[in-house]
Length: 95
Image (cartoon, rainbow, N blue to C red; front, top):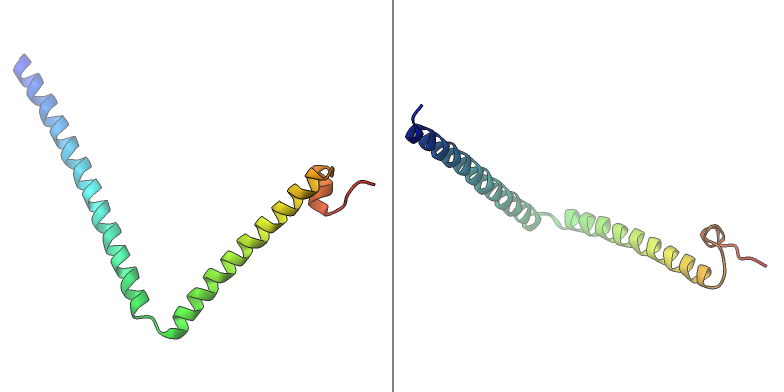
């Protein structure tokens, strides 16, 4: 096999790999944009009841996060006050 054929084969292989990777990347971007546009369209066309349901779901998720954070803050404050990690988690303190 001549040296020129070997170089040509390497260049062709690299070119095909680059084209494939670029196409996959571009296709993923197009799909993402299409999904975003579809979601925006469904939100715009949603009835008030559906919008309220989505807002209630978001609210419940936020309330759950708040409760978790408040619990963690209470545990930290209990530990700073001298409670062990287990005592802080159960809400009891040492005597």
